[in-house]
Length: 153
Ligand code: ZN
Image (cartoon, rainbow, N blue to C red; front, side):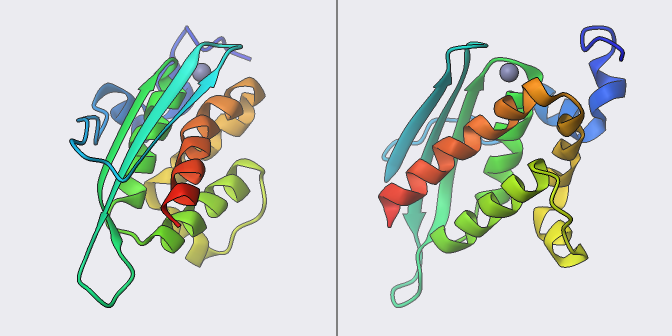
């Protein structure tokens, strides 16, 4: 197997490298409704997530603000950026569903086309399954998300 440092681009693909180089939703929110942080002491990865809810009265509130800040390898940074893009504009329940789909993807469960369409660009992270030590890196921002969603309920 080629080492990751040789050419991460060729191994991980364009979507991951694009989000790694230009992460989305990194700006901090002023008054988040939930803020969570997860840390992996084994590789030093850290993910901090802020969520803000709003929306018209009488319907489930939407995640109108999301800030995802990650420190560590290219995978955690790309995953945090893709997560932020993915949950922005969704309800808490929809974000929880997306999180479950992402876990299914990372566990190698076969997903129907409708689920893959729901995941969108997140499907690019499936490549990480080839590097098992990195799966934890990909999932860390999602652990922070799930804790944040739990607090918002
Ligand atoms: Zn990592």
